[in-house]
Amino acid sequence: MTSLALVNINPFTPESYRKLFFQSNGKRKTRGEIEEADRGEGKVEQELPAKRCVLRETNMNSRYEKEFLEVEKIGVGEFGTVYKCIKRLDGCVYAIKRSTRPFAGSSNDNLALREVYAHAVLGHHPHVVRYYSAWAEDDHMIIQNEYCNGGSLQAAITEAKKRGNHFREPKLKDILLQISLGLKYIHNSGMVHLDIKPSNIFICHKMQSDTPVVPEEIENETDWFLSANVMYKIGDLGHVTSISKPKVEEGDSRFLANEILQEDYRHLPKADIFALGLTISVAAGAESLPTNGAEWHCIRQGNLPDIPQKLSENFCNLLKNMIHPDAEHRPFAAALARNRVLRPSLGKTEELQQQLNLEKFKTATLERELREAQQTQSPKENICQGDPGVSGAHTGSRSSKRLVGGKSARSSSFTWGKS
Ligand code: 809
Image 1 (cartoon, rainbow, N blue to C red):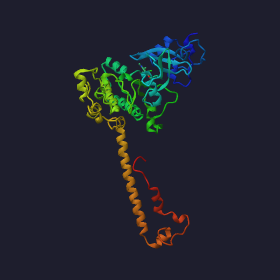
Image 2: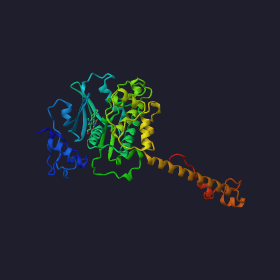
Image 3: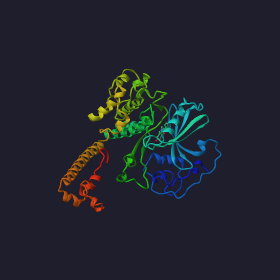
Image 4: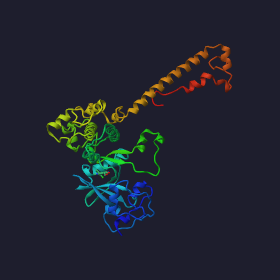
């Protein structure tokens, strides 16, 4: 029996995902066929699998081999090798990194552990790659993360460049907004990423699901991503540190803010904003960034690298602000996440809210005037209406309390913010 047969098929995964593992005749695909189908998305015929396979005991000692089927290597870096794997038990795909560095115990300084600590504390956010598990094996740290099926932003930029293309303004704004939301979450959790760059942003394309989400049904603003077709997520938390007690391990020098080089850690979250500004510039088509030298310093003086497309003035100014030499001058992630340049619809909402508040104010004024007019009417009329303000006129009956203005006076309380 091949190890491929030792993978369960999860019936709840989207159909397109199941198609990856089965042929139209219900037979399981070989590893080669799976890789082939994964490369040529959309070519596989529509048919559901008929069989399920039960996990069987293997003789393997390694947890990695026992629990996962390795599909392919998806990246090799300075700190480890990343594989696309299927978990045999749940039949889902994960990205698994095996660190190159030997795992040196559980010291707080251990970089491999820092990544795990950060993931564990951060929990779940739609714009941060999800963490599932981590363990040490053969003296190496292994981390099991969410698999993002669209590769990295760096790979997408390279691919676009090959075709003589680059990301256009609406797409750039979408990426900037989504990553700002992820950063806002990380920063609000008291941490900073410190290695934001295109190769640490991962893309998830929505898989065809059996129960599609209807955008109109999404009421909660924070759930908007359920209708998004492309999600951008912050990954590789290997440099994460806390804002209050930082242990800074410098990230990629091409995206490094000058104050970090100067060991000035007073505004750490703004170093992530600086790196994000340059990340978006690269996605916009800026040539490869300098690692040091005069050009490096020129960018740190607030000059955006050359971008070979016309961006709107507003957007350009926003990017410029993000790389401002004075860290304090750069916007916070939270401010980016509600910036009108990135979210023009928020402006409309605010405008409508103001109009609504004005109308409510006018209504409240009219109601008050009406009550005052009623109170200045003849005492006889007041008695008929059972005005409790007129001495001896209160009848005590339920219906007599129901003044015309009385009811609306009670219902006219309102708030000036969101309603
Ligand atoms: O999808 C990924 N999730 C990760 O955490 C991750 C992923 C990728 C991908 C996407 C494939 O479509 C490519 N590479 C090179 C990845 C690396 C990681 C990763 C980064 C992991 Cl698993 C741990 C730490 C840093």
